[in-house]
Length: 247
Image (cartoon, rainbow, N blue to C red; front, side, top):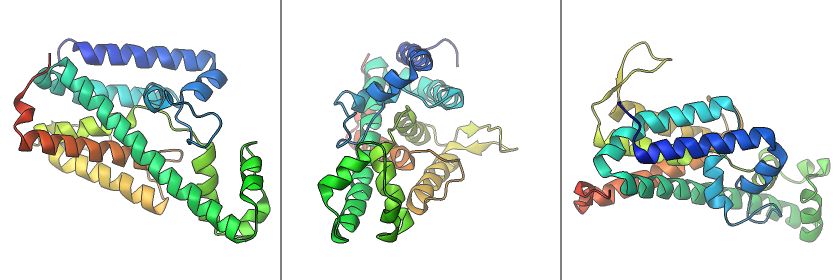
């Protein structure tokens, strides 16, 4: 890949600095800079951007930063620094929008089920704002409804994965026949095949709740980043905008 391009170099540095700070002051950093549900008292407007620099562990930041370098470098060289940054943050913001929208659906579905069962909304809010819940709620709605309701309110989102998925889509559309060598596959696979399969697996996991990648993954954020990445690439190609550089 050669030397680091400017935008990717600075993104790597900022992500690593945030990771070090979160390791030293985890409570404060995750409260202030993760993306919380908008009705959660921890939510702040800057989290829509800041959560993209937070990560849940060493493996999380390692894979994200590797993907940023591996797939983002040829894109920045092709587009220029400013255009790459515009695409990267647009995909990340799109991921946050889709993730928050899905959480709103889960939250309202759970709240509606509890209120329709005779509970007072303000009392329910008072309980969950303390990080608590009532076991009796599982007698009033399905387990998945209550689990999704509680997770939507209490679980913040962290990571650059949404933006990375946008980058993956852009790479796949720009270099479809590039062969990727992956640790878990014994043979190279072309980008135009691997990336759609990866996104489909995330969509499957988000819809079914069954994740082959492990727990605690914001699958709809991945899908949202991929969707916004695809829409931007489609629009750029349709309008010949992809031929322009922003240095």
